[in-house]
Length: 398
Image (cartoon, rainbow, N blue to C red):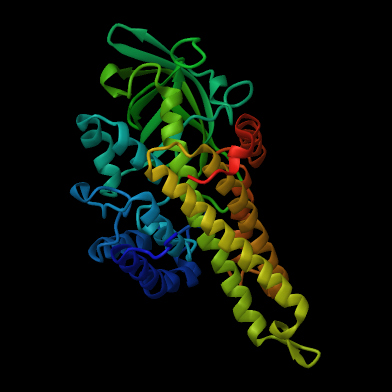
């Protein structure tokens, strides 16, 4: 097995790392560049995005003919890891959720007309987007088959009514992908629709307060009261909604993992710098065996996370949904991120708990990792089902 990065990917990785170090981290260090939701403010974001475009580091995941860099998912992994060395990195490169997952699925399944209308403005950075699937109980959450939002055909249009919540980015999104029920068929009952923020028939009920920090546009509750969508804005075919969620969520979950490994590494970087310098009782913290155990364990867990991510990326590149591999990565990386930043705060003491570093920001952000795109328990349930079906083949070599 050869884990050497191809020269082109290594070049992108190095350039992303240098851009983060030289351009983004200084902006992150100045709290004047933060907005009220503890994300990068619009003006420094606009400036850094223009610089990323000029540097040829824009939308790594999109085809070159559409203004991206044409990297496959295995090539994205080391680059996404580097960009999230800064808490502001992914959005600067136009590789942050939910835009990232929406761009990938639109590029994969959209018609040429849909790509021009709905995808290209997101790639160009002219608009933001959201994926509206999750609903309040008794609607769909981790189980999309429970989706209750309904779309009824009236002539050549679909009329949609229902409620969604925790829709990431909805407060600033212009383009939306909306999941709704078009029949009671268990496999073919869902359909994906495209709609624009300026259309009538829907509203943002509230921007749900969270422990934060928040993505741009927050996490919103949406109410649909006879939103009208023409047939041309059905994504894939009527009844293909469940299939579309599988196409979108696998790669999107994995790109979360790629970014989270970067945050885990940043956490340990801050901790390592501190324990190298801080002394107590006549000895550096870094020379204490108990500290070494903590650092060594997290370093190992991060490396395991990276290997799981890369294997899942390889499997996706073969055309497989990689459900098993993505679920394993999702569970382990989420746990590793949480443990890494918790350990880093412990090693940095009161300084780690303060806002003198970004550790407390990462700590609050990390808690969502075990929930978003499927709770860890759901992924373990999926893994159990695959194991019971495959038996010893669960660990088979490709």
